[in-house]
Image (cartoon, rainbow, N blue to C red; front, side, top):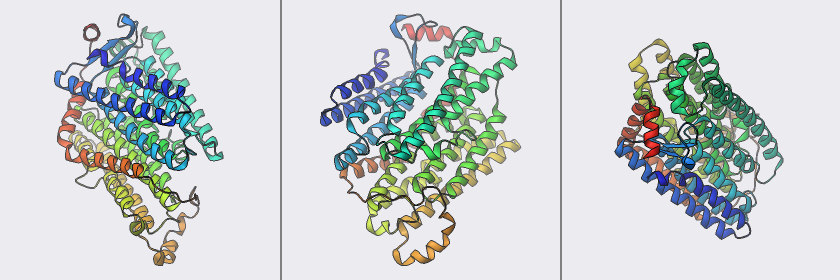
Length: 518
């Protein structure tokens, strides 16, 4: 099985190279991209089944170097699960973009650039998930960020270039802080291997640990878009092409959350900042959802809800019990799939109505009932209505917090419930205005929502375009995956529970050396 692990990175990089060489052959690029992500998805599924059944993580020492000195690729249940979910999302969004490119002549997503950049983005995401040391995690971040710089500015419009510059500057600040933290940690402990750090970190004074801890938390907090470091996200994501926005919203912030999980559960067990994380989680939930309520543009509504729901993940991480960590992992999987699906559905709305502003769009329930269903199901899921996976994940988080029972936990539970209700309100208000409202209701409804008239990007309008069947099919496929998260919630939640338990049980260097040598 260990021979499969490097393929998670080398396959997308090789696919990107072939796609770049075949820049003038659109069908070749599409075939290579689909085949690469499909094969990666199969490998990830095999690895997940193996590590879950055997309860033995896979460690690969690249180049045959000894564990402390070489690059170690590490696949446990968490890494395998997130690679599998990411590959499913990446493949579905790729199919959506293929349909869009075929219809539009690749105006928004130039195929010669898009496919190599997209596969490099996938390679960066997978590298971050299976990194066994901080520096390789940094490399994974930089790979995906370089690719994201290209993808977020595709089309070269003024808005995309402007928001792309903001995104690049913020990402560079985060990367510089992360690299500085890596240098300080290596200077203090002589290693950046995660397992060795978990054993050696206790040798440092608590004050030194706290400084290093906060440096990493701030660096990863920017990438995860936690408050108050989330200011860049609502303006950056909505301007990108629909497929790019969908994959960014679904995956990129979760890589930052994943890094926080590894940091908190492996490196700094004895130097917790859980109270600070709880406060940050509450502020992220409330500020994010209040921003969503004040928006009139569907992409911006979803961008703000994206920020608010990162708060749930930080909440579960800060509870720091096996049950809470397991619930957090389940919620991450749920949010990756549901958030991506919603952005794909909004991409269909934009093509059908020529706008994503609820001040302009109306009557889609009658004009496009399929799109209405594709939006409604993930919307109520994200809002946390039972019996969907959003409700299951939130209930599990609240239950884990209630077991602790401290006043701050009760406050967080109340904040989480309020955030869920406001999320549902924002998404259902958008449903009512864009889908349910008819032309004869316009005057009265416009008067009721006149306060949204000054919302950013509320007046955006584009030309209406045809919707290829493959775009609808890929979105419907993602909706089916969101439903599957509910139907198969039992087995999935059991896997996530095992992940939560294993993350709080430290792996020793001896075990890592044995796994890398096996």
